[in-house]
Length: 437
Length: 170
Image 1: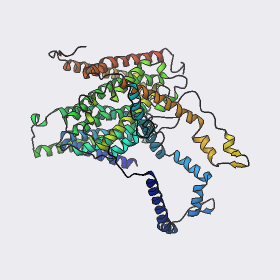
Image 2: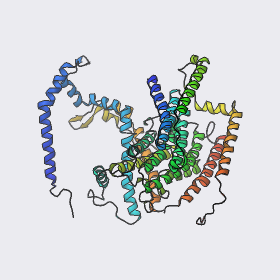
Image 3: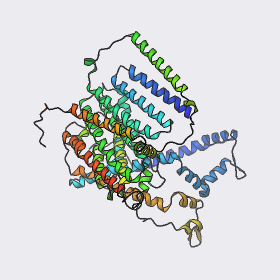
Image 4: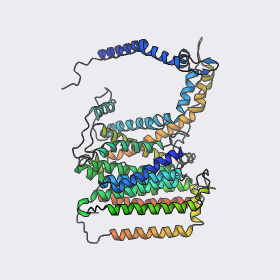
């Protein structure tokens, strides 16, 4: 058995890390710190609370929670934090990574296999990290006659479209990257970009299998976009708004799936088709056309497309939750914080541990309602993702003519039935003004 | 800020429109066409009409441009088109475009469009819907009939009686 690093020793690794840190501290304190001081000498420093902000004072601020926690709080309210970390990319990528692992492990259990097992000692939990490192370190091979600019741009565009989709999803009240008034229309506009990127990537590879897969993907995505849009119109009719946050907030008493089950079912099926998941995985049919439109992608380009695919999966599941399952609404199971500990400090016998500056953070930003909302949202989203993954272990792939027949004949008809149900509910006064809401 | 965005959008729209006409590669030409349509969506955003802008993105960039791209990919260019290089035609086309632009601009400048207020709120899409079903209902019905007619016509045109698929079992 070949080993990548035969002389690897964990103690040596730690030793090298420590020596790096020591060298960094030494060089920084001998060269970097004096340079910073010299630069600061020429920069006029601000006066805060009647005190000149010297570097020493700045370091004191860093160690003082009453000074740093407001900075953290204001950082958490910036758009940058929202885009990068919490309701945006980081959160979605974390859920997407969890989805990949759960998918592999769950499929293995469904099919009486073991699945990822060795990487990370316990049930293969580090398999994802290993796969990521493998993809990063692999060589990117571009076919000789490929159209290089489009071929390079396509994976990035795919991830960008998926991230734009993620940005529209409200996770908790007020926690959304882009609170667009026309949120649902923006979702439709973003969904329209995926077939373009797919077909361009497939065409630019200049190879048979990607082209066949790309054309299948185009057929599938474009024809299933129509029932997808039609199935969501019922929700817009009963809520009277296109803003996703308002749609989620309107379901505080009951989720719309109780009234519009037909629309929810149609949307779920079209979602499976848009995501190219089994039983609609014709664009990537690995037993017929190698890997479909992904065949010529290698290394991190393939990794980016996979990341985009799973971000898209999370975004679609989250959209289902927001539109039909009530978003962040749910029973309040997160208890209130014991505020006397925050205000008076935690008394441990003679010692009192008190962190100043924590109170505004906990009462304004991270309230129990917000944590509960996020918890409810994540629980529902994970449930929907589970139901998206489940058919992969159960169903075979369907033929392309059956797929198009299903999309054009059955799903569009059912979507219209859903629209008429919504209209009947509104005009009968069950929902809307004067009704239950 | 709005001026800079307007200038950038103008450059994108007109530049990619010229590129869409002049590119040798049909695929790149249709990508440039997408840029033009997206730029027009940007103009709608600038004009505080996000409803129209998003529909422009969803319908024109998301569907029409994809159809053009799809058609272009399935067509072998050399077999159908014959390249006609004629400089006189090109200059005549540019001159015609300039004349049309100047006359349209004169009409716009003459129409009193300079006096409209620019800092009004965006029109609510619910008001658009209300106006459609009350004041403009004949136009709505006419549009519905035209769309239904074109869909029926497309179905009739796409229907093929001569193809018999023996393998189909359902």
